[in-house]
Length: 432
Ligand code: GDP
Ligand code: IMO
Ligand code: MG
Image (cartoon, rainbow, N blue to C red; front, side, top):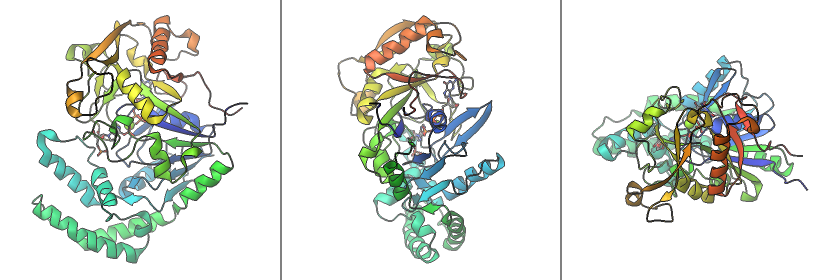
């Protein structure tokens, strides 16, 4: 009997920006529902269609197909100004999202004081700063856990918003003044601005949890779009250089309010090398001379989608992948950006770290991790536009097979360029 896989989670296996948006966009062609479970507009997912670029931060990357329904789940944090800017971009591109975009009432709202505290607390940390995206994500999740957050359900009720904002703003202003020596934020204009956002958001608020439950009952194809990557997970990432939500497949269930048995399959998205944006340990980071052999950041599309920062680049790290495959219960890997390695003489894979069989749990252990490298000959030819797996250069096939062997997980998708058509499917993920 063919395996039932109506619901697929697509999650990042490294430090984010693995190419999740591209994978979701491709799978969405045959899906009905696409949902985001966590994170906010710290995410930046890029899709390239016939040379045209689309960037998503909070709206699921499946929205470009008119047959899909897209959901922003209760575990996310929503900055209304950014969300509506994304909607306006879609309108300009002729994409109709009305009656196709649903937002959970449980999601928390990002306020300007979150963005401000994000920035001020990073400044205060100086050299120890996390290098956040500055979108107020951490402070918003802090309020959620501290039980003083304001949710979509509160925002769309003017009286509740008034009462909650009054209380919370008093505390925030004390913090701004006393801790950061910053001017307080006046209440009235903030209330007026957010009341207006609430009015606009109201028509999108929906019982997302129930809608996804019904979709699952009916066996309708559903995609869960991960944001960030496993090493940015709040619990199991390279803490404290992490984001503030659960970025793992388990976070999909918690963030959307669906049972874990409703996820049939998990695809782990990884680059054929490694990148990280922001501060924190990165054991396989390229040396300056190694970096020179790679295409530059703009040619490699390694400039952050959200903040425009250059991403740090490194060799593929199997120690990372084994750790994150385990954390996510990954069924197969989508191996992205193989083409970026096209012109290298030598390609290295880190097969483990000296003196430790496990991925280090401490920053100390990670800063001092000594990668053990295996060297592979480069294929020195373009893989872009290659139409079938068999047409890949033999060295590229050997590289892929070695990754599968080391990870003990099959590769189901190989990506050789940003475009939709620059993709090789070893498994089509379509129900028989
Ligand atoms: P996400 O956050 O995981 O969705 O990834 P991003 O969109 O932030 O970053 C991935 C970048 O690589 C984007 O600019 C993509 O267009 C691009 N990209 C994705 N797959 C490939 C690929 O196979 N080759 C190349 N050259 N670029 C790719
Ligand atoms: P996508 O979904 C890459 C990183 C930031 C910083 C850390 C904490 O596009 O893969 P935050 O603003 O979340 O408090 O920042 O997490 N970060 C990402 N890095 N891709 C992302 O999302 C990221 N979202 C957050 O750079 O190091
Ligand atoms: Mg990204």
